[in-house]
Length: 285
Image (cartoon, rainbow, N blue to C red):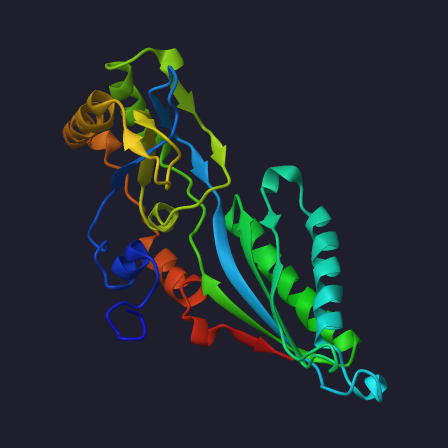
């Protein structure tokens, strides 16, 4: 669809942000199943990790691996060296940063009789904050570029924007929490879970006050063929009650009508520095 020009970005919310759909929206209330099948009914004010996608292409020089290996430049060696540097780099971040980085080798050209002239490394970079994510991206690029250079080769890094970390509006989360208490006990609500998963609701949360509360009432794993609704009352009706009651409370209490005064500035950064097209994301040395 992107190649056909029907969408600009891979995320629906990112496309809507780019097209100005949320420019006159004051806040967002969303929900997502939390997968719990026990006594817990809801979660509130949890956070989601952000992520970016990286593709590193190492360029070496092919040569006969038996007769003249010294004339070649093994791209796989550069990729291997970079993977070690990336592994060591991860130790420079504290545990609470939530950095997750697990590169895989997705391609290596040539055959057993030829020094490989190209190798491709791909990974997601995940982190709990935007600052950590941007810092880790820069360090990843440095590992790739300089490890290739150390062995007399070059490397190209391509970036595709993932989702920003989600940090929910405290004011709106408090409203949601109050409405949950009209339907369940306090001990049936989980608060401030730090999740390594991601969602494009994080992009909205960066721009405007947003929440995404969780609800139970399912069986089977989320995103699997076994997934099904086991508690329609909670999954369908209680969530509707929470949202409608929260909207009413926000609309009738001006002090709850929080807005982001820096929307224009943040959207400008978002479009230029975060949501760049993959074609604009090439860094080659």
